[in-house]
Image (tube, rainbow, N blue to C red; front, side, top):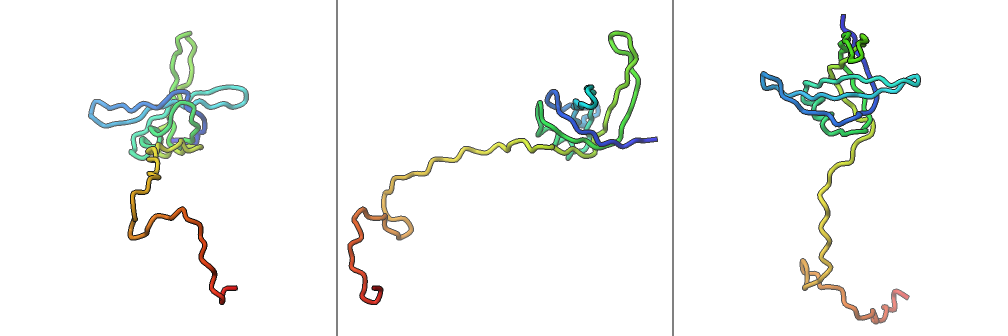
Length: 137
């Protein structure tokens, strides 16, 4: 039986891009989920290129939702207690708040006018002192 889940939370640390022994890339991440005054951590593995790209755009503290099949396994913690490991194989990743895009800095406009541009002479500093035609009055 396969269970599909949708989990929302925050990244406690930035995702990591790794390469398998066969040479395929994948991304690992951890999601911190707070519910009912408790904190739970879910492991995420992304093998699809789209899920990998979306995860790698995110960083520490970013909020996201992850959808995919769930794998649950027991493990023995350092203190000797048996705990449950929850791993999501991410099919879809959605950033809940888009991280800012990196933009190239804009060059300051050159305010110096060296001459006519495209046949248009530069504005003159002289005041407009022509009389209006009679038909306009």
